[in-house]
Length: 111
Image 1 (cartoon, helix red, strand yellow):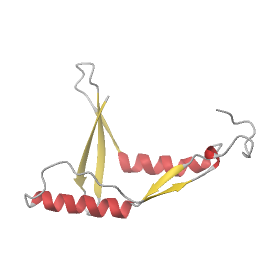
Image 2 (cartoon, helix red, strand yellow):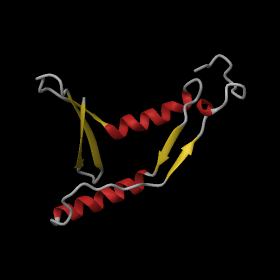
Image 3 (cartoon, one colour):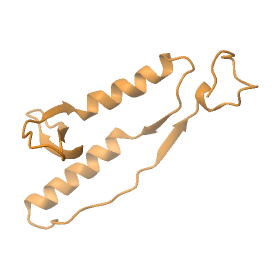
Image 4 (cartoon, helix red, strand yellow):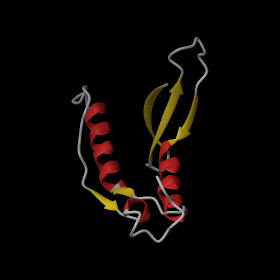
């Protein structure tokens, strides 16, 4: 599978990211997309309700949106044309999925 990320600006100024799934190994030209932001948000929110609760990474959506808007504005002015790589500060939210089996509250959970 090939993932192609596309961003667009919505009417109210939100930047929406969509990911397109395209099959590399077949001639099937059809593709489907999902709103990545809502999928990732749901995954992170649901991680706290699983058994055991899953460890997740929290990244500032405000910082990502600010940088994406800067890239977009620079691109519209003809300045930025290449691929940009940026690292954002993040926070590891440790939950029960990252504990030793002896220390875990979930005795029935084994890897």
